[in-house]
Length: 217
Length: 217
Image (cartoon, rainbow over all chains, first blue to last red; front, side):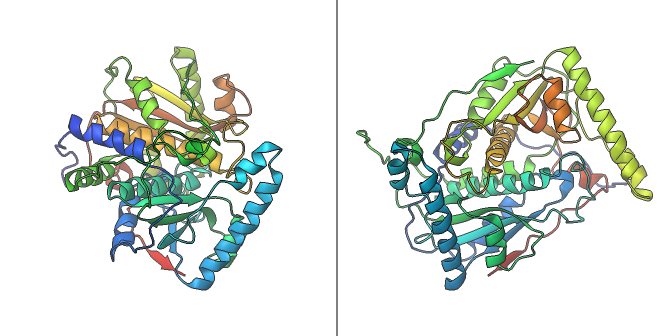
């Protein structure tokens, strides 16, 4: 069925690359403070091309990227964030409410590029393989593309923030995409105003990272 | 609230690293053919430590890794895969049924290491931040940890395969983990028997990768 060579001699990755990859993984942060200067022309398309190298269930590639550009669309997203964030603030108990109010949870006003990301769960691509018992793997595939985008951007010094304090159905409507698409996340991209090795939520006393346990069975 | 320096001068990543990262993203494949030799002692713990550098909603770190080691547990997983895969085969229409039957969709028998991955949606870590309107971001965080593990492993020449042809509730029961945990995926890890630049599903004529479109709004 295949008449070209299947196996290639692939050069291994050297320890220096492995160390730099570990540094990238540690350095990648959710960015909420952006410089307003735009990304170079073509950057977003190139990064999305890299994101599309992500694995996907059954090779379904269900990711759908939407660049949000017009002032009215951006204003609608900002208003939706403000509404959801006010509700989240009100739901915080006691002393955590003041702490929540002190957090900056998005960079919608400064980030030069905005990407809304969706999954198309009905795509025929992949012929349904691998998703029969776990249809959520379609969304999972899109999440891996988002994380790939995050890492590829950060390797070029570009920061990304993932905004999830939004009501999915309202984003789908605000952006006039097919109602059957599943909203995955809203991404802000741009050059970070600051670089940090420690997550902002940890620096601001919201939460700390914990140790990892490996269960055995 | 924080008395140590917040901002570090972080060395940028150079173009050679960016090119190698792009090669890693392209080279990473879902592996179903493993050599049986074990990974060096400590490898799995180290890779999980890297996976835990993934972003997580509200710094909730909801990932739960379970190393599946005993023959009876592995047999239970294999039986569950066989059951689900037989149903998936039966559901294929016409000529695709024969094509489906010709696919090898897991490396459960050869892979020296097996990891079941779950999300703990009820963890108090993160204090609920960012997941009020989108509770699925807990699962999404775990998926990003899995993809981080995938990339970190591949940078060391270690292959990973993600098995999703399983019924989540049965995996939770078979591995005796808390019923409230959400099953995300079952991972096979080991040294690949072959290296390929083209996805196996594409080489075997199941599906082809398509172009990426960027919508604008």
